[in-house]
Image (cartoon, rainbow, N blue to C red):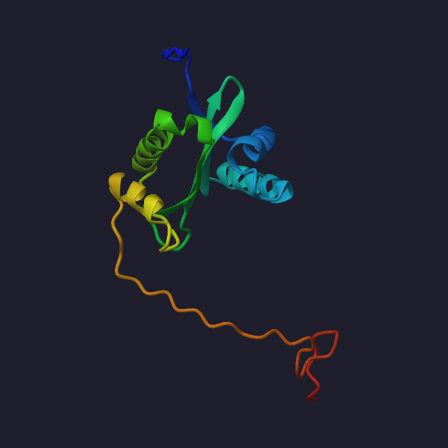
Length: 166
């Protein structure tokens, strides 16, 4: 026997704090090293304090069950990069990601940000489609990468950083 019901309760979007680390590890980033999640959160909280970015969580009864960040570009006035969008799987049917993106739009407008960017791997078609539904468009940019082999010893430098030449 099954029974459907409408859940009651409120979710709240609020600025992230260092205290959100454990919930984010548990609900949003279980596959990422907990130390990395904690460190990235600490860095984002520091950026918020300096006015260099934002990180928001969706709070469900005191637990961060969704997350998104916005990093302001220091050299491109009016531009910011969206990062870290994650919603705990049981909450995805509630369209929380859309609410977060709408909230980011209002934060961007209030802070003079006129361009939001996001980098998504080309194979993530569902994610790309989601961002397109939220008004993002693909830019005609090609990113080229060259792998450089790291040498164990720097040529021409001694341990003190001085060159061998005099």
